[in-house]
Image (tube, rainbow, N blue to C red; front, side, top):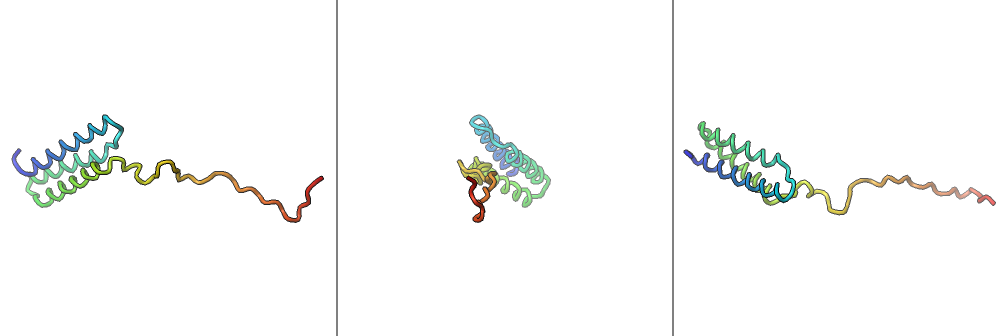
Length: 106
């Protein structure tokens, strides 16, 4: 490890992979938030080594916030839906009311 970017990106990627493995053992988490964190760490590290210090640090901080989102909201897929309720509309057709002038048949 040569720079702060190497240490920061390696540590963040290691912790996010560890969190993914723990969540994968317990339930089935989505893969792409963790994949986005890994790709952002790679790009931030490469950019930091190439001399783009402030942009690399901005990417790594954004990846850190994304990791915090994965850590604090593990069930973000079901946050918008309330358990026990469905948002499907009723499929029954309304019944027609009897006409006031209609005479009952005998």
